[in-house]
Length: 464
Image (cartoon, rainbow, N blue to C red; front, side, top):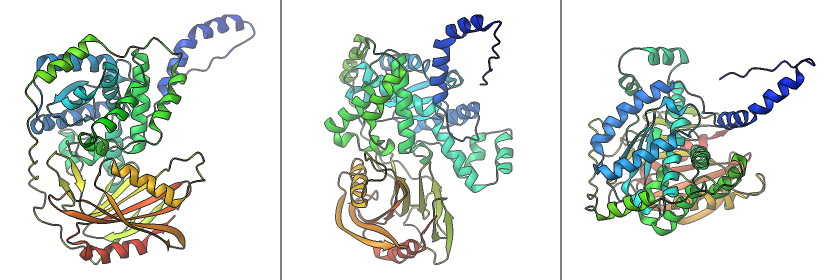
């Protein structure tokens, strides 16, 4: 969208001033629209819809979808109404809504506007504004194009821009072409695992949508707080898929006054309470079954780490890793992992069982320069416990890494491998106003086999 400059002369100044004054509400609304600028993306919105539609077809086969007409009618009516207030040309997207017949409290969005809300999320919401906040948050991921943004970054790391441009411009199935590059938007795709910054953006868009749809915009953050306290065991997967942004409630509270004056916001409707009561009268959701492994997924443990090392350059840091491992990147993290390191659990969730996960962490502090390494590391551990309630610290000690103060934290945790524990090492060090965190991950039964490789990787780290 382009903007025209007004050339005002003395002759018609009064006329122009009147005209500009009349345009102020529209201009203010446009400013709010421009504030939500999606990140770098090689895909067009039409291609978002294309890959999302293909992914939705596969998701529909894998998930236990609820076919109840009353619930589906309610969720689709609410979802479509909310989407009309979403920024960034929301009419470009498909906006289809499904309900997953699962008691887990969760929701997710595929590119292009295909949104799935778990039955458990509807039953956990206390009023319509809260479930509207969940849906508006997912619509935020769609219009900010987070899935294809992460895929674009991964594609650019694999091939030159000229090759990618030719790939995206070809006729035929775009999804099939992306699979050749190892990129998929399936239910367990890493490209649907959003970063904290993406979650913060989705919160901002969700708040904007709730405000303009005349719901209490505080409701979205309230829902996240309520389920964390009331349903800790049922929200593990939610916080795994939706890592909590720092100061979430404060950020929402600060955004609301910028949207406009307070209103007589609504929080609930009889329609929501009727649907919630109706859901509770239906047969309980089926028990989750383990998701069968993909045909190309190794059935046994990964091969031993290669003694030959290659180099990953992450811009802010570089590190060596075995040349028989692969790299999976997201917006603010990278995973270095052997084949078969991602394990699908009984709830259909995907977790890393082997390898190294590296990310940049922004500690919460009144001053970006005042936090200490131990304080920031413990904040990160508290965040990890939201999706890993059995995580336990066994040792924590300081050391020097590449001449810098660093902290080593040994962790015991449940492994995503059924019936196993894992012993991990979290290494943290300061980099500017951020903290670089590296988690070295392996099941307890083989951790000694991986330790020499992990030590070599740690020694190779270069801070740039």
